[in-house]
Image (tube, rainbow, N blue to C red):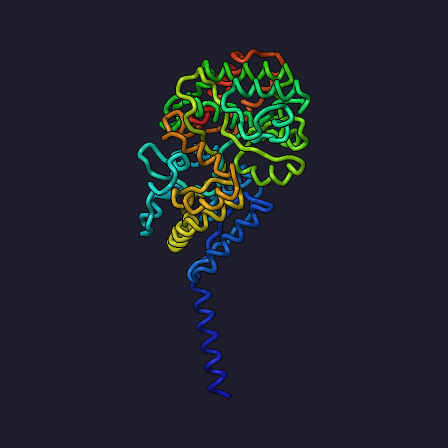
Length: 437
């Protein structure tokens, strides 16, 4: 009996010692609902795959709420090892010198097999400094695409397999649809800021700011009032007055998807990550997928679209062993199998070439699911199309919505609205630059 007790105690002690030896790290994120459940499944897969580390995911609310919580925690020296930050927070995170551990540095110091060239340049370019160093780890990246109602197209006498490719076709198809009575409006859109302003500019290879769209440093200023942007906003105003385009509201344009689901509007431009939601809600018609339309008279279009979504940032001030755990976790997250599983489920883009190849059979079985990937990799990104990096950009996106609505109301022309946007936005950038010094 004594031997059995001793043996059991020894086994228990060994078990506890092994458990205590595990390194636990915190990951604060902003993904609730089904995406949050999938995220936790991925984390569990990592935790089950080895016995040295435990990643503990914690939902902290919306993107702004999660970022704000992480900043407050850092000031209180209670920061997590990893925090998920949306793309418009990139400039702010980069300016927080000493508060972050760049991913390229983390992976090198922890001796991980890390090859930046394996990642999609259109994805990592957004999160890379001017020396080509990756600063954060892409996780959920998306890009806007066109969704259209194939049934409405057929009723209007259009080819249901042929989405519009140009803005001239968007107007032509929309008016044919409306005149036939197949739908009340031609199109709507989510995210006027992200899709009809930032992505529009990248897709047409137009700058939106100086210093490589802010990549060159905090002295960058907005140049969003160029001829191409004025042409496009003015065109949207004219089409709105004619009932061809219906505005879905500020920020993400929450009123836009219902107009597409109810077949009031025949087309919608929204995130590629909306694919699962679109298919779930489009129960009475077949959905088609297309790239964003472009203006044929703007030289350089179509170029490539840019991403939205978020990346994972590593915060400084944690014990050394937590950084080894974070590096191991990032290697797991970047594996083709994990990325392909996540991208197939969510509609986000696979972040590596290998993950894209891993999804070949999924793309074959789900026509149109690769539209975002083909669009964002259509051409090698230029200085105008690799993304943007401005401080206080959350506030600037609010200004974009306000000025767009002022134009729609008729109180400003497209030129006046965009001039005001640049003036007000640059005031935000000047304030950010002063705070950064």
